[in-house]
Picture 1 (tube, helix red, strand yellow):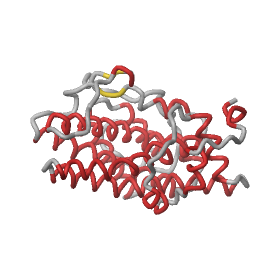
Picture 2 (cartoon, helix red, strand yellow):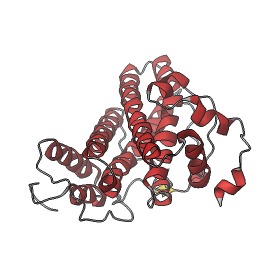
Picture 3 (cartoon, rainbow, N blue to C red):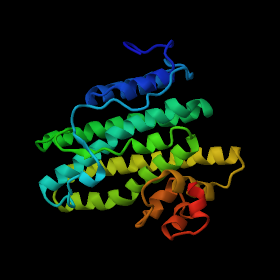
Picture 4 (cartoon, rainbow, N blue to C red):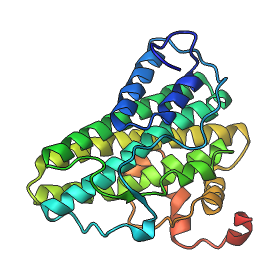
Length: 281
C-alpha cells in the first residue's frame, strides 16, 4: 500500500504497511493516517493481506537481550529519568506494531468493533511514542540514543496463531503490568521536579486502562462464544504462552476498572497448583 488511502485498500493491507515501516516518525505518521482513514470509512473491512512475521525496525536503538540491558536505576537523576523515558518510548514504539497486528491478523474473527478498538489503540500508541520522543529531545536525548530491549515482539510471535492467547498475554498481562508500575513512576518524576514528564506518563496510564479493557472485553467475547470459563482459561493461556511471571504488587483498582478482576490473576501470583505443568504441554 503506497500513496493515499482509499476504498480499494483493505484494513489488513493498511495494518501490514504500518508494521513494515521501520522509520519511527514515518511509522507514527502512517499509524495516524490509517486510523483517520478507518474512521472515515476509506478502508474496507476486509483481510486479504497477511501480516509480516516481524515489523520494520530502525537502525537505532541497538537491540539487546534482556540480560544484557544496562540497569536504569529508579529515575532519581536526570540521566536516570532519560533512561527510563527511553525505555518507555521503546515500549510504546513496539506497542504500535502490536496494536496494528492485532487488528490486521485477527480482525476477520470478530465484529467490526474489534478493529475499531485496536486501530484506536494503535493511534494512541503512536501518540504516546511521539510525545515521549519529543520529551527526550527536550532533555537533550532522543529515541535511539540508548540500547533497548530486544524481546518485546516475542509475545506477538508466541501468540500469532491464537487470538485468545494474544489477548490474554499482550493487553491483559503486558499492558496490565503498566497499570501496576506507572503510578509509582509518576510519583518519582514529580519528586524529582519533572512535572512535564509526569503528566505525559499519567496520560499514558489513563489510556492504558482503556487498552486493558479492550483486551478483557474481547477475551470475554471469545470465552462466551466458546462456552469457556474466562478466568481459568486465561490462566492456562498465560502459563502456556507468557515467559515471564505474573507477580505483585498489583493495581487492583485500575485493573478492575478495565474489567480485569483479581479472580483472573491472583491465583497465578499465589502459586495456584491447578495442573500448571499439564497446562504448559
